[in-house]
Length: 156
Image (tube, rainbow, N blue to C red; front, side, top):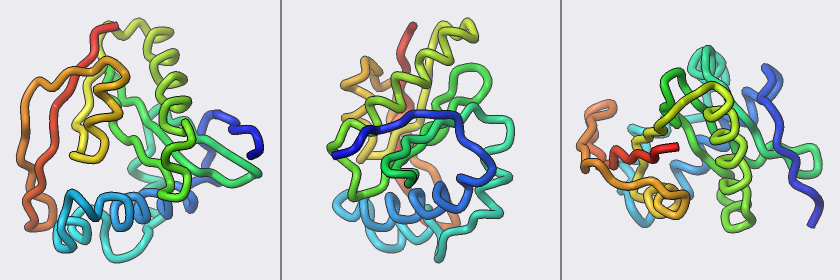
């Protein structure tokens, strides 16, 4: 397996990021969210234009292998780990762990003392392994579908 490169996201990554999000939601969360929930959350098709706007103002890092983006994590001001998605075929290869390490480094560099995230059922175990604890279970409504996620935090 070739080397995984972690780097800052570029505008040219938007299409890959949109596809990873779409695939991660629609394929990667089948065992925890039903089809209506996945469609409400992930949309009907990848939307690079929406993602270009969504990523504005975030510190986003991507994982790249063989010139292909296979995952991304984003940090918003104030310590919110806002986005954390890995391509389904790259899960279990250490991609999220490497991305998270870089996001935590950036947060510490910015003087952030606590990270928070709203983790899906799928992401909750990953964040727990990184030292996050559940603050509360939450119900959110997206495009008419109710989903459960978990507000989690980690003191740095």
